[in-house]
Picture 1 (cartoon, rainbow, N blue to C red):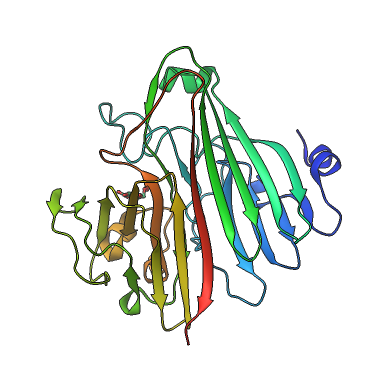
Picture 2 (cartoon, rainbow, N blue to C red; picture 1 turned 180 degrees about the vertical axis):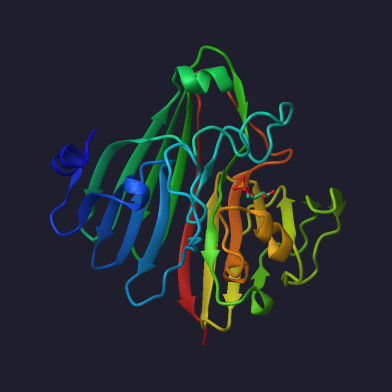
Length: 301
Ligand code: BG6
């Protein structure tokens, strides 16, 4: 569907406009009294959310690709139907098959409070079937307001059972990783992907001092990112998610990434609402799973 048709069908005067975004990729520009946001149809991907009166909450890398078929670096990429490397075939794309695909718009509405609800959809097709032989529908329902609600709904439309892992791979904007603490994962053992080892549970809020890439399983906890330099705390609450991934590439990994500016890694922190590791979701034909991430900001007193 071209931009004019999308605007005719789904645009909301003075609030929701479709434009050709970076790299001419179609995107939704959203401006309401509660927040501003940008959502790309490629990957069903929110790249920007700024509640009124706040600084942007999502980090976007200035060197991100905006190209047909390449994942966007920043915002909230969607990992599905596997998180990270494919468990048995390393030739398959990392983080699954939907983050570089064009999604459809199913509906856009505004509620009486002013929240804008954008429903994006991607379905299995021949290309996805060649990589992952199951029929599915995946909806990303993004509610943009003074909080950001991301609801990922997976439906098994096949006549056989399938298993998935998944993540809302959320890049949060912070001032300086050296001064940030992450509360909420105390008491939760984790798998350290850098050391490739299981690690004891942290006893106090995390403070990163080097490359960190860890999968915390069996946790439904809200994470709080305490950022004194920005004078704010970002909370990531969740439902339907038993895993949380914490990631910052630090200096040398970031330098190796083509789509990551060398000096920007201290300003990002991924707190990913997920089902990963041994938290695998099994869906029988017709079954649906919902995972939701609720992101909010409060000022530090
Ligand atoms: C994180 C993974 O979720 O995503 C890391 O735990 C990975 O291992 C990172 O490096 C970024 O992945 P990608 O595919 O976007 O470079």
